[in-house]
Amino acid sequence: MAIISDIQDEQRAPERKPSKASPSSKEYTFTAKIDRRNPLDLVEKTLEFIARESDFFKRESSEREVFALARRFRDKERKKEEEERKKRRQEEEERRKKEEAEKKAEAELRGEVIKDETVEEENGLKNPNKGNGLDLEKYSWTQSLQEINVVVHVPPGTKSSFVVCEIKKNHLKVGLKGQPPIIDGELLQSIKPDDCYWSIEDQSAVSILLTKHNQMEWWKCLVKGDPEIDTHKVEPEPSKLSELDSEMRRTVEKMMFDQRQKQLGLPTSEEIEKEEMLKKLMSEHPEMDFSRAKRK
Image (cartoon, one colour):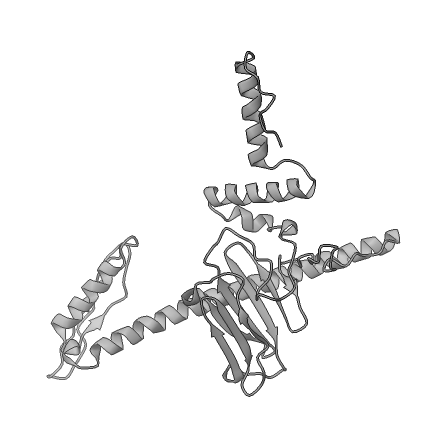
């Protein structure tokens, strides 16, 4: 019998006193350090130890059992990540409700009427909800540049075994077994199916996480043919923006600036840059005629 001790990062585990064992069994101690930059090295050493000290890999089922163990750990991590996302969404929803209640109370004190933020505008586009998506009759969705979160309302008491959820690169189908689908259509853009998950929340809603393939654009709708939002009015949360790396953050800030400029009928960052370049050329070469130079 081989015993694999707890892995320690800094020091070796103290030797254990041999325990009583049957004459046909032996006891071994395995101690190793983990290099966080290359954790597979530890996995390889562990498997080498098992192969050397036991007949585990002589069994036909050994490979299948190792893969099953790896999948179990992977599923555990995915579940942990989904629980963390769910907690963040709940905290965000509570914060939004609190802000809306405070805003409504202040407006009532001033005798103002709260404007519906999801009304349809003259161009046929709708204002995005607080999560930069849209609330529809049967489901709602929110988004960041990286992900789409969909919440589909189902009857109370619904179990995961009753749910039909098919997530493909360009298609999403969600519903209950034996009933017409609630969502069944082509996605606006492609996603990464291997990085998408779904779960039941409080047995009353199906929560779906879709990871965008192109993480540089805002979606105007979830499924083609659905009502569209005005992406010029999308407003990323400052806290989320601060979590991005410097290059991605600059890109998002530029997109936000350009959207606001277009809304106000002002030049975008690229147009401003061209204008400044033209002014510089005019000052450096006064003898040249720039009257035909194109300006915005």
